[in-house]
Length: 323
Length: 135
Image (cartoon, rainbow over all chains, first blue to last red):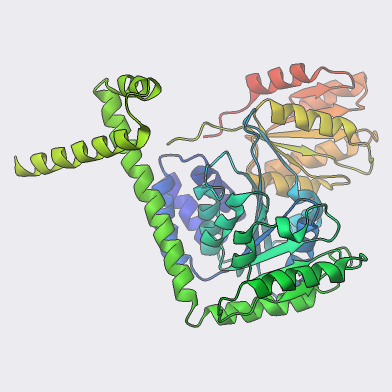
């Protein structure tokens, strides 16, 4: 058995070292990565994937710790992928989400992995999605993805999560109105954490009023829950809602979101493959630097250059097929 | 496109002391040097530290301890790393570790010991030169 096959077997058996190694392989985009994902993909798809997003200071990590404990009480196994931003200047990252969850580190039914965004342009890196697949295939009942809800890119979480939970806390300085509209729309569950604070009820009302502005008819009515993560208050109710949503997902409307996710992943994979193939060819022909210079000199814009390269590649492929 | 290899480091605080300024200074310096740093927070048991290192598949572990309990905790940590098959992870330490204990710690397999006042550049240089190739 090759090393990759060993790791795949280990992942499917739930071996923690294999899971850790597998995530490293896909994160570093090693040569074995595509084969690894292809091998585990058929066995994924059973976990309930929950995305948790919210600004720093909302108490996400503390809340996740309580959520995981609650699920563990119910006998479920949980994987957590905690994502933090990579510094655009240094390329490094401080991954501190584990701090609030460290008591869970020795629970064999919990697997926590910290990941840096590594400056992936869209926000939710392919590596994050693949890490979720690995934890899923390893048999985790629940996989939680935690991201920082700052900026447009966190709407991307819909591409990896089946249930999106948006967490807010009163008095964070950013008013509800500042929450990106996209985030308001994709939330399946709103949580107002630190609900023991004075302005918690006002925060709930603010969210409600914005919700009423969205007149869209939705099959799932997004609830607004209150929690106090530090004490665990409100967490059992949150789990109930999560369970409710999971059951809702097993019915119809989820089809649309699933199709969206599948399409998005396919498109990403195609884009990457196309770009890599065509650029590699251009480099081999020694014409790559030349083209970059043309773009810098504004002789051609990037989109038009891509169009030309694309057509050239297709013409060549057609010619090759004929000969 | 291939991601450049990132060095993943676990900065851990074994034992009961709550002085983590040094650990955080080192963590930030390593981040600024382009590494991905996982910080455990305070009061970690050897079991927690080793399990975290396993799940996070780190290349390096930095142990920060100021309570004097290194002689009790470090051997346990090194033993657990061996048990779990994490022998290819480099371990270094910092904090308050008396000179006379250093040879013993090095014999356990701890590759570098950096006391208070060590310039962060020294630690970064050491890491870049000694980080294991775990592929």
